[in-house]
Length: 301
Image (spheres, rainbow, N blue to C red):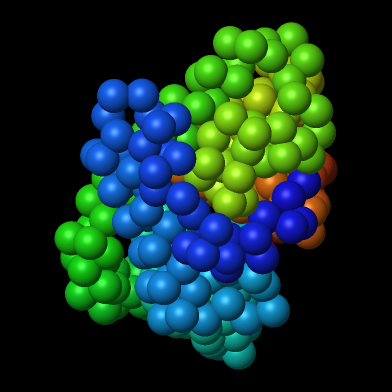
């Protein structure tokens, strides 16, 4: 939905007018202006120039793709030593990528997904020695990431200008509750009343962003199928006591998916949103499919 936003952030510092932002803030001039300016400078200088982006426009988008790679890797068979090594090496490469992108959200999401997956394996009586390798790599990822994690929280403990963008989104929803401002129009329309949004920074929340563009009814129509698939995965995992492999792998990703959705907007960009729906649809279609239990037995033997 936002193919042009990432590139527009590159010019944020030069286009940003602190005085206009202070005037827009109405009474909280210097504090809001300083917070917003600090957020932009931090994102542009630190994030863009210290973290790899791969073939994406932002390290955060690369890290989201790595999250989906980790999710799909958990579904790979591990019947032989060669297959197990392939899974471990793939996860290792994904973890290195997550470490290098320095995305706090994705780091927590990936670690949470792997630990939930391992807990479901343990409680379902499927724990094997091979799971210690995955657990060990996850612990190493968390330990190795502590220095930059502490550094980023010290430099930006509140997540930059998120509070400001939420306030602006609340105003947009109040004014355009039913129809929104139009698809792909949040920055163009809201940028007329907010200086930060004008630089290409929308609200850092996928649900609020889609509601601002499509209206609350439109956002509900967009997200209801996604929530139904995730809910079906949770229900089926509980009902089958974790015997459905596709369901429990998707359940492992639920906290990470919500964390990504509630803390950013990048996943709504064209290719990333399509990949998200593709992965969700693949696992969703396999939930309850005939032979899942037998497949799970073969994969984990």
